[in-house]
Length: 264
Image 1 (cartoon, one colour):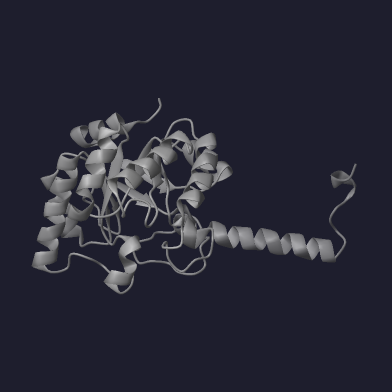
Image 2 (cartoon, one colour):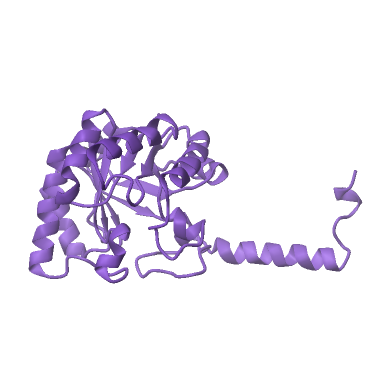
């Protein structure tokens, strides 16, 4: 059955965990979709894992549209969510609605995600009013990495923790159907999860969230630049891929590939 926003809300109500992953192209999206995930996020993390940027800030709306279209073509069951990139919803309500609409109308996304708390409430309300589901994102919001001074755990003191709890409630009130909690203490994530009636999706936020999301490059060990503490490598596909490439190179150089079996 096709997953939807109501699937997420029902899972929270019934105490069922939600499993999400990122995807950025047709082939991987099709593979992930066949594994019973609930949602596939076309994250602006593509700037780092696909385009080689140091952070997500250079990613443009055109990049997100390009990758979202490809992912949507490969998905039949999961909810397809597209990130709104840096500066695509910051300057005006009109621009926020316009860019969210493009991700749905042109990119075939079924929901969008944007980062921030109190400062983006007007954008969320307007986008939801335009009949586009919105996923919120609190904690370590990568588009704010320059303000944070790097990729650092957030909400570690009492004031910062209370602000995140308050922001989560505000996002729910504004109409967000779920909230990503990134790199915050597990005990704080538990408090936020109890404080809101919409599902929380954790990434580096502990086991008490209503669901989890990971960048698929990280959980398969194929992003060589870093391995964050919160990531578990479920299978080291990176090692398998490197060995396969090495075997190919060796056989070509040794003239053992191709053989008659692989020739016309």
